[in-house]
Amino acid sequence: MMDIQTLLDEAAIKKLHIRYCRGVDRLDWDLVRSCYHPDGTDDHGSYKGGIEGFIAWAAAGLPRFESTTHFTGNQLVQVDSDSAWAEHYAVVFHRRPAAADAPAADLIANVRYVDHLERRDGEWRITKRVVLADSNKVDTIEGLWLGDNLQPSRRDRSDPSYAGLSAA
Image (cartoon, rainbow, N blue to C red; front, side, top):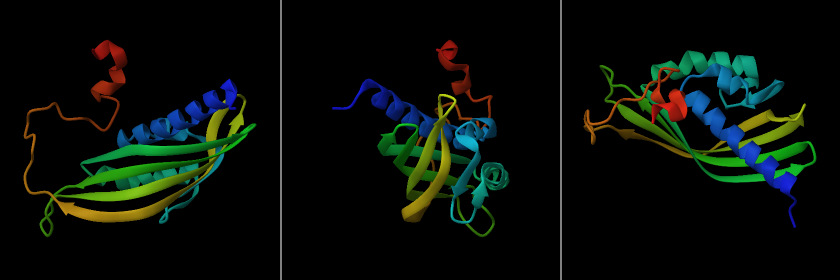
């Protein structure tokens, strides 16, 4: 039988991953940084190294997309005292704007984030992350389903979601 502390630890680790996704999608690098210990590493394939280098790499590349969306599904977490391992399944969408030589497109990948984490000073953070690609594809955009019916999201702290419950 699982004890309450293990359930709380699992919930904290799952929430940490969701915070990471939010940080990347909103280009909120302080939020992304808060998910890693300062000596943490990230392996995103074309980037392998420390967290500050990862943030610089992501901050240079992600703004070229109109939007990114990370949709998290299955999350498996195993806690062993102050260490943990986690595997988070996600579908990742990157909206590429139209260019002279290519139409707008969604770059879609099914990925898994495999993490080693540690609790230090009572806080869970990533010490090592590896991103694995299960599949990927490009979907060309042929018009917009919603048109201008919804308020557009923003990729910074001016996004209405940062207002929290006060926006309701």
